[in-house]
Image (cartoon, rainbow, N blue to C red; front, side, top):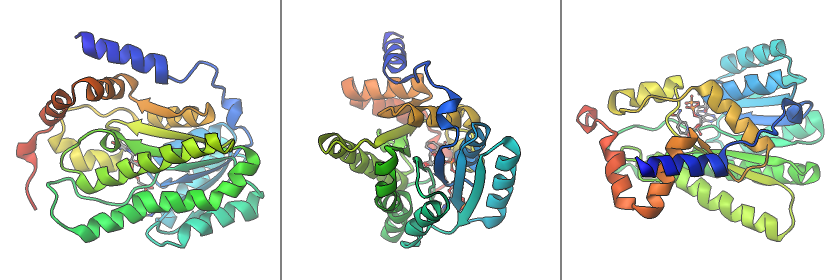
Length: 287
Ligand code: NDP
């Protein structure tokens, strides 16, 4: 009991969004959200629209993006548009950022959130799949950042990188996904250090999320995970707050993630066994 309580207290102390967040921080800001056709990205778009931000949304499915853009305009977005395409296409990140530059002449916040499809199962030895997932989940984040950096330096803006507990701890049945999320931590944490040394006033916020109730996540893992997912609407708002407040990391839900990270530091083998006990491995059918 003591360790989870201590974890929760520490998580609250270090990572809960300070009370001084105000929705006005986003009013009129120019924001790109990737993976915005569904799930957490769609919810972030709606929050940002209510806060009267300018929005450029992206994902592959044009029909879904059209609906999200329409809803954003109804909710009060200062402006909303989309550009559809796949982050598997190495030229696409530049296309997205060019669209922002041509439309707004600048950019204040880059929210990198999209993920490619992967399986939830024992690693099947398919190296090609790992390579493809790295392209979508990791390398396109790097490419988006490279393209957007001149604009973000000018506005002293923010980069928000959506990651996962699987990018900090050892989660089974998700080896390719987990690898892409660990890569994000390595790359963006190193970049943050360089920005500080180089006096580049662009914040980098890494979002460490637990299980969230998006349609895709629930469909993929609910048969084999004991935990109850946290709400995507609240999660989306916490991500935006953490980016606006230029926090180093967001831990959501804070007590679960905070406890796990504390255990990782002091009792890694115990944490591994705790994580394993959270899965119903008998429900995983080998493919
Ligand atoms: P979803 O699967 O619901 O949404 C993924 C988004 O990415 C969609 O908009 C999808 O749209 C887009 N996308 C998929 N493939 C591509 C592609 N090749 N190129 C461009 N866009 C693509 O994900 P979630 O909302 O559940 O997750 C959002 C973020 O949160 C991810 O980074 C995820 O790792 C992280 N996270 C989620 C957790 C959860 O339990 N939900 C837990 C921990 C972290 P389209 O198909 O139209 O392209």
